[in-house]
Length: 448
Image (cartoon, rainbow, N blue to C red; front, top):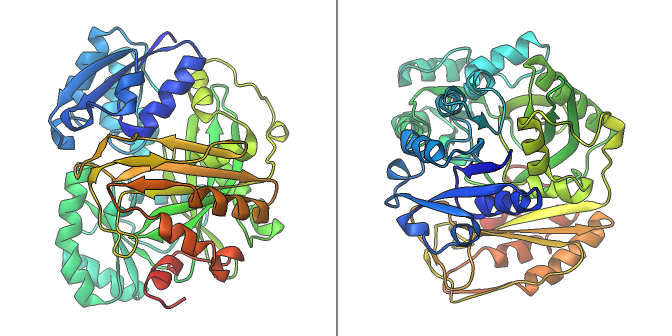
């Protein structure tokens, strides 16, 4: 592989560029009008303007992206995460154009990207799943009838997409009526389909996911688990590995189930098996993300693996530097804090120019930045400025180091969630690692 187009933006595009430089791979990036001054545009070898700020007019223009890739004679396209990363149609177009899509085959993306099909596949493979529908909800009446069978609360989800934007919790029929059409519209806008799916909501659950990797020889490995339960609006803001307060037996079971799930579909390249774990440590398959995750750095920090390097090796049918699961070891503890330009109380975006952006560096500290001082955080995209990842010999060491790092992180020109992170570090529920998916909501409301 000599030349790669990155069909993404911000910190993940910059992250891919840096691994490509290490591997002597030339990079091509696309950028919208709003992103012209961002670091990923400055560091790429070749840049192409793709369109105005709205994603439908820029980063989602599949045919335009493919034409750029063809004109530049690239060997492969890396989709990053979000945007087109789980779009089976785009992956297939890349394959048909004779280029490599850095990720699983389009058939697997299609199969696992649809929540209904993914559920059926996992059930057939003997993997436990959260109670949910076996077909999409065509209308709100069908959704209401199903909700009556499983009982409220339920989660209303976009069948073809992931992330917080495509889901909402409904505690009663009134809420389901209120949110059904809105969720359909969001699903159509962000994922290209308005099909919805209902799943039973499990209260006070932990969101635990396993990083899996399939090589070109058909082997599947895990790189341990991450706890992603600290969420706002069903979107993760803090992630850590290993997961605190998880018994050895439960961890072993979760890792085994993840391997079982990935093996069942013949998975290749990087992916994630997401699970919901209840108060009794019963684990249920939630979904498979057929891409790299935002929180992949915590896994890299504890394992020492460059996951993007592994992605590129596998995509090029080159061998990984390991052949056996026992060769993957986890050391110490890592926590990722997603630094957002947002109000830490309301979580509303806070766009503006970064008049100051400073953060510490040193051993055990990694910052994956999407913006630098002087850049503007616009309202067109997710307002994540950077990811601050801290590694320590133990969780307590990691928490102490986090306190120091966050206190030295200075951002001016926009509001950020740094005060929220500092507050979390002084909360017993976070210090003890006993938090669940609703904990952050309770904390912000002053209930915890």
